Length: 327
Image (tube, rainbow, N blue to C red):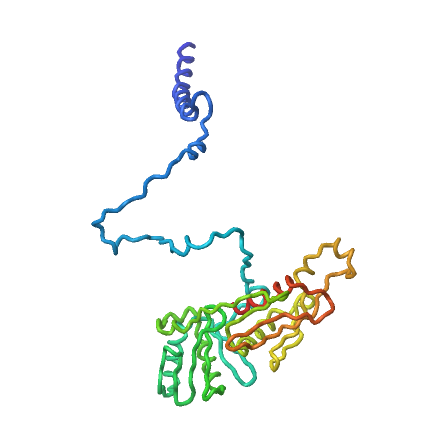
């Protein structure tokens, strides 16, 4: 019996030793050592210094910090910066690879690819159709043929391009139809070839929202015809929910839209606010979206066309939503 007990006792010796060693590492002066306190006494180490004999071109800063980031006045408070509204607000807003825009008798194509990717496709189109290329200027984005001039420029939406088939400023419809069919047969994934020179056609102009007195307006650095065509396209796709947002009319001659829209202020009213107001339900209201040409840019304003309240904050919220189609 004693030999059996001795064997059982010996089995527990290794476990006791391991436990003692583990506890010894966790305790100091009879209490648990919180290692978080060690970081309060940490001191910065001197920076790593490379020898002067190093190759300066080979060893450089992997993440250089621009001097502009550390100069200037210190910001005292957070800025009121709002992210752009996502284009995928509703169904049907995913852009096709090739889409057509039209204002009056002018038509053009919007391609969901940058100018560097579209330019080789225009060259291939002109060659495959044997249009008789007379001049090709990638810096201007123009291919002059015996039948029409193919013109390429960056579109308002980032990463997109605009293509025109015209002669003396007039759209050549049969050329545009053929080009639309040709580009539609390709996709962005198939357009692997890219022209570095044509990438310079991309513009870096930015849409801005600004406050003018008690009102807000959007300043779009594009001609009014292009802006109206883009807004007409996306409003027709997205403003289709009656009682929430709905496109009632579009006036191309005066560059205006009439919409029925429920503001964010109205959507955010809680049941108690509704009970103690004269409106017993959430209501939309008619608003005019007015485009005004201003040189080579366009000013977009939202004007109340109803007897309901339309605050400056409502105005800004609506302009942000509509402007998202142009980013």
